Figure (cartoon, helix red, strand yellow):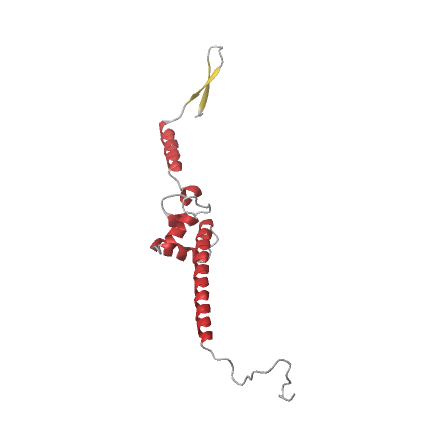
Length: 150
């Protein structure tokens, strides 16, 4: 049962003729179709229709980039909350698309920290305006002796 049979063509050369059984042909076709419908590639995951699935891809997404995640963060969407939760899970933060989420999150947290520091500074400044100078200080002439005896 050879797959190929060589036939002589009356001295004009040799031609190959496939001799495949129908069952084998059906199996081969099914295998090819199954291979075509297999798992999506890393690029397909990264740039597909599901941004949360893209977070699992080992390839950086061109579709779900920093601008995309920044918009989600600014709008405080459920998608943003889910992405942050997923990327904060141990082992996930090193994925390329979780790194993008992490950068956006870091920027937002830094902005919040800066606003809070500014607010606290303003409170302290306002409080310092109401403080009286320390008591017991006498106004001395420059160069006067500490005991007041000149």
